[in-house]
Image (tube, rainbow, N blue to C red; front, side):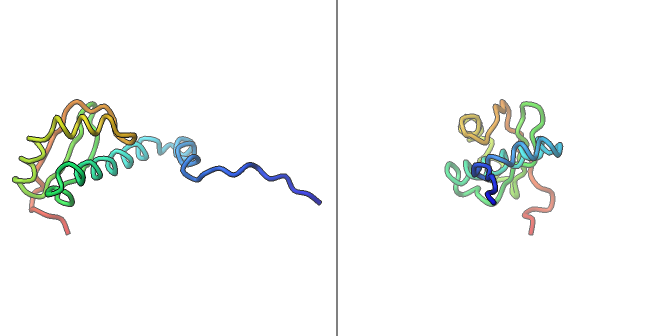
Length: 109
């Protein structure tokens, strides 16, 4: 008895279709954008890595939360550079604005 096997497919190639079928495509897009932003910050503004995070995409704006005012200021100064790198990255989107907010209460634990 021979069983027909389907060709092997990488798991990463199946996730977008599964997310779409489950209605989770927006969440997957946001998750990829968050991971992409973290990688860009770690590469271009290492001092801010771990002290900020992308929290949502609001239209054409990327909303970021910073743990301290000094981190927020650095991100605002480097905004055009970060947005350009974010738009060029595979997981990024074409955000035109970087909105940075300071987290109330400081660093999260």
